[in-house]
Image (tube, rainbow, N blue to C red; front, side):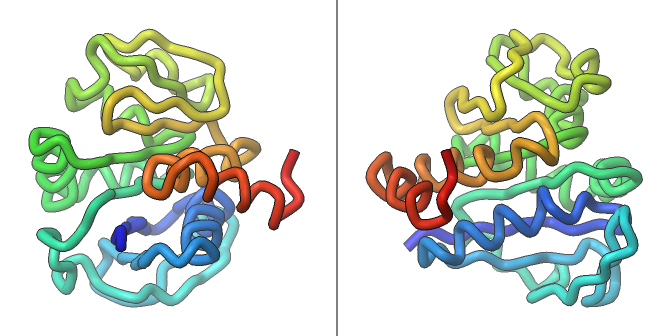
Length: 182
């Protein structure tokens, strides 16, 4: 079974983060909501506070198949400023493990040189941060083991793309039908 961590920092975009958690859990994928703060409750950019499953230092990264970074402001900046997480992003990328980011968060991958020569997307005002990428306007893009999404309005396609990568076309198609998504 696949195991995914979605990382939460103060100011995260609620829909982007929780849509991924919801859809993957519906598909019986083991997902942990992980706080990079020193407390289990994290407040998003629209003042919605959610209790996390784990703190960053409680994660066994050897058992994780994918890291997911939601966007939001200042959530994206807070994720990028947390060096232990950035070290894990680099490590996962270098090991050929999945990393995913949506909205403003793909800018983190751009800043780290991960997107050079890859197709990627992000929130329109962050496209200039996708350094070296072939920028697309698709709702979600997969290039190798890097998945990017455009923003809140594409949270479902982004989550379904992650599901497709982890469990295949049939599981993603079944989920689309289950959640009545066209």
